Image (cartoon, rainbow, N blue to C red):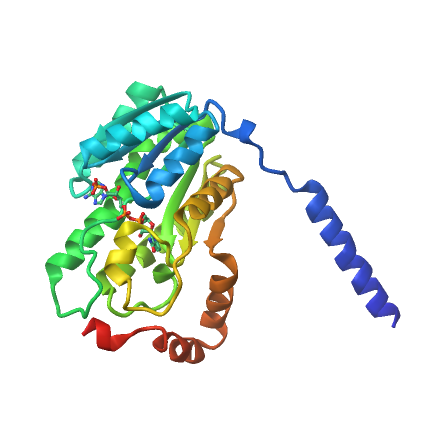
Length: 290
Ligand SMILES: NC(=O)c1ccc[n+]([C@@H]2O[C@H](COP(=O)([O-])OP(=O)(O)OC[C@H]3O[C@@H](n4cnc5c(N)ncnc54)[C@H](OP(=O)(O)O)[C@@H]3O)[C@@H](O)[C@H]2O)c1
């Protein structure tokens, strides 16, 4: 009985300490920060740019569609960004990724947040039939360009004691049939950035890494690619972007969105992978995919 009382007191004490010392998020933490958001011509990246803009950051957006980027810049300015600009860059090309970081240095004078969000390569949702071109192009756009941008921006992030935010997916944590090349790129991101985070910490380099693990989000691309093929409900991209920005600014290791549908899946993965795979098989409408 005495042991139970001690245990409960300890738990209460720990909870109180956790909530008392926990820093709370405020928009002031973002004002004037210099942010580069990749893949921000539409979808989640566009919403992330608006979140930073609304809180008064200097925002640089990038993708391949110039007209869309011009519209995003205009909207960032109207939302209150300290400044907004765009750079055209195709992440199939690693030299373009390197140059993008140089543009951030010359146009923003440095970088506080590098938000890696773009996704391209092969975005089909269907059987993998040995198309190696799809594997290499997905790896280049969704993984190698992330690594290249990180390497090129690291000096700036060290100077500002900044943060890297990596937009990943549940597909980077659990098996994902019908999106084999895409899932491979997300698993690669998880390995690269969790190892990098640990190494930066050991080397006392003050750059934080936040990985966002996302479920099904209602962007035009996702609705077009997987709509009618899985039974899951899509979550709103606006709330998703808010959670990612908050998590990045608070320097959390991880953002899981939507939290409650995803967290049990992540726990089951380690405890009972067979049960998880059995449950997941039920969420694929295979007759609409093959
Ligand atoms: N939506 C979901 O359900 C979901 C779920 C889990 C994870 N995620 C992750 O969330 C992130 C955003 O997804 P989303 O649904 O918002 O995607 P999206 O709407 O298709 O947007 C993708 C962005 O990447 C850019 N992009 C594509 N290929 C590019 C290339 N070669 N070079 C430069 N930019 C390129 C696109 O712009 P341009 O075409 O103009 O270049 C666009 O701005 C991705 O990392 C994705 O894996 C999404």
